[in-house]
Image (cartoon, rainbow, N blue to C red; front, side, top):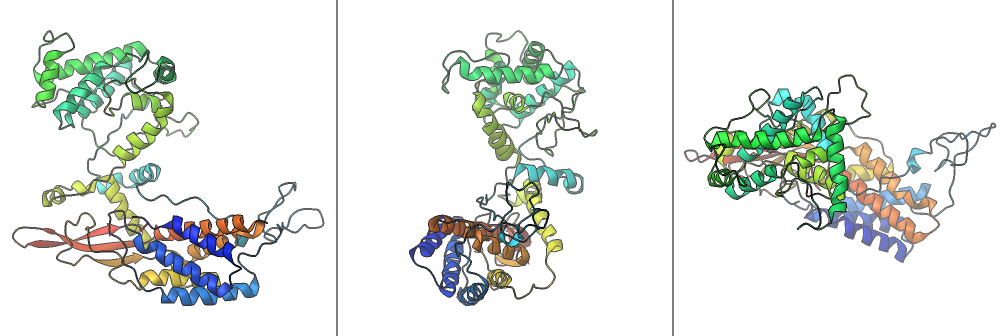
Length: 505
């Protein structure tokens, strides 16, 4: 299970509200709740945290919170203090906690009191947008291995028949990638549905009006790209079915009613050789995320076809439904982001056998992204420690807690890919990066000052507790380790191997 930040927030908030805490006891309480919250933290591969001693945290937090009090109580409730004004009425930067929204010349507030990050930190899966940037930079260097997604690859320069062939090849590749006969049959039914639209009530709920907006946007995407909608939809269906008949050796005249002959062949197995449209790309590499067309992108190198709106992508992406147009407009964004991007394109491919490792199954882009994150962290590591500011010392002790776990910050099992076993290296860890002291100190400073602009103790306590949890969660996401394990080989019986653990959450 991930770190228990919900209980951390509740317990810290209740402690602040229940009594005016002394700085020392408040510091110790926060340290204690932090230690409790992270006891169940884990890596993206499932290894859970091996808890260390909290004595250093309690001592340092207690002492340093007392030092903070000497300057100013972190949770003291005071009126809003805006930036000071110069003789012309302009705000002087960094002289107050806030800027005056009514001032014609507002200035930045003191960064110590700037708004802390209050947004919950999302654990994996990997952000597809960050993945795309990674692939743009490293696809050639790593020769990224195939995984469960491929792109349309449309630039907008395609003729109508080239567009049809590219879409059709994608359909054929989808079917050939499927091992289940029942699912292949569903894919055939889905292809047969191209060009038809939902009317009345459907099995997924909704009426014709619910699906009208989706139909309109699919047709607009094709039409705005300069293509005839009816031609594209009918030809994609016809040419894909004909290619399947050729590949399976089914006569064009056989089973014309609902393609019964073809349906049986598709369900029973894959053709020995697939007949693609040879005039366009057919050797798909799963290297690029499917990018939606951005009409506001004015970069002269930008080459994405205007047909590639998310409605178009969802329409031509098999999701298990046997009807291509059975979508409500409100479902499209979720399906594009979650179904198409995260669950397919950014899906982790984890090796399960020695053959998987030998065949580079782990070289899916998400795995290589994890690896590169770890490598990049070496370049970002801080040189030396900061000063004796109490916030920096609390951050330093928090980082020291993780350093003190030495070779076992997380349990040895399950192994981190591409390792398949903790043997022969024992499932121990080499720490690569323990996070940024400066960044964590800044998060703690902002969090502990978060409630100062509130005149409500409960609201202030909630803000402090929430901001603290975010600062700590962000730090966990910075932790990076190399896992030492191996893969079983019958004659050895283990070959040493290392895996990469890019974060804890």
